Image (cartoon, rainbow, N blue to C red; front, side, top):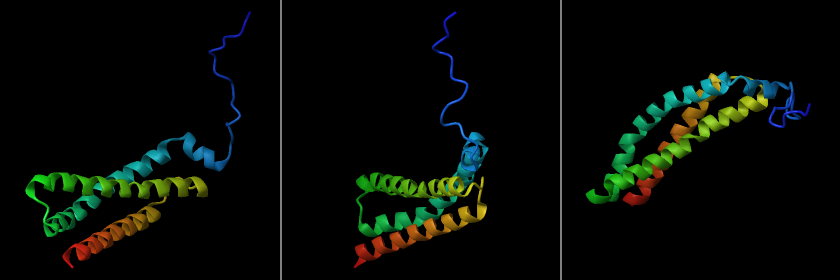
Length: 128
């Protein structure tokens, strides 16, 4: 009787029992990391909303282009925000620790502070 070619193999060459691979075998760790960061995204956007609007007003963006400029600021900020969860996922994979709330808080603070400093530089560049 011929074997079914569509049957998955019993094991693959990528199956290992290393601690790094065990983290991702249970997706709970990655899920918790992402959930923790998504809660922080609301704070991040809320905190950067007022400085972002202030900069756009300082730049003299006309009302017709204000929404587009605000969306651009928001999208760029959220792309930069993604560096936080990505960094934590890599650190967890390298160190074999499933979740690191202290690291998350440090990364969030650094990212938020860096964004505010970037806004300050933009403001100073526009106003002088």
